[in-house]
Image (cartoon, rainbow, N blue to C red):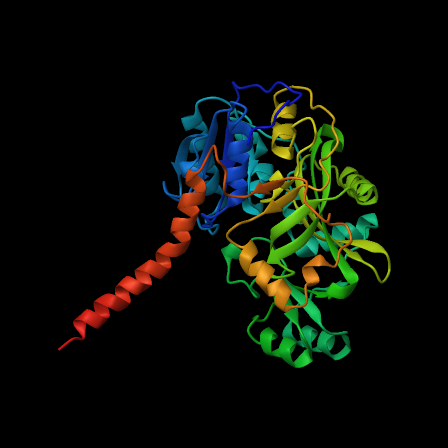
Length: 418
């Protein structure tokens, strides 16, 4: 719902445009951004796969721009499509990317886009490097930020040498973020139990494996933390939030299914210093894992854009990172405020499965001592009393494949009758 007592005045003459590249229609982060600014009276537009994505049915959306993409298109075609959307909006709009491809496209084509859009200025090559697992590991090493020990084998023979000396289990990830542009080596974060399993997988990676192999941080000795923030020019933090991830889907390695706001001044300071060293401006979504064995926070992912669960975080001034960016880019003051500790966020279509998986695994979702005994308010990803259609469309799109399959089975059974 709209924030009560928001202590800021937003410029309603400047629209927002949700930018996404790739086919992932059930994206609650885009819906959250549409609602966050739309509830304040900001005209909202969004690029969507079709007119029946959940985002396209939000009451706070002025218009969807139907533009299906795969992420395999060349940059010129993607740039042309984004400029076409800008001309349809008809006035400069704040860009809100929801994936790495969109964030990189904007950063690398700032000169062409600045006539039609508002967005934070950043070194053009930086978002691509941050989104890359290999690039991020190198940047962490360069600036003294802890991250999991990693290896990037350049051949199958290099994988064999790694397997002969590595301590298992290990984690395999696609080296580059743009996995939709080619056949990915692994599906998301993949835990590998031993050398035999690693070598079997590596036989399918080709002559130049596109993976990074990282040390596995044991679940029983770790906590998952998230940091969301907005940094203005000169990498100055305008608002910053910290929280703990208690469930994800797939379990322990995927999208946030449930999380809580929890104050962590040490982690906020580490994050702010790293961003300052990088010279990054804009919204960030960081995934950290605290390793109790050595007392270090290790950076797993640096998403140079809005995170899907950003609505977990709101301060007592009514500010989230999307609102902070809009205020800053339109020349408005960004008010300070304290984050609302104990607030909970749940993603309805994946959390039930995640909860079941964690329970069967011995309740490992609740190893962190930082979750409150009782949440102080809950933000749902989909369901909202003032905007019910996105949740209904999401549910319909989830059940439609099952209904279609049952219909096909029924027709086949009819055709087989004597």
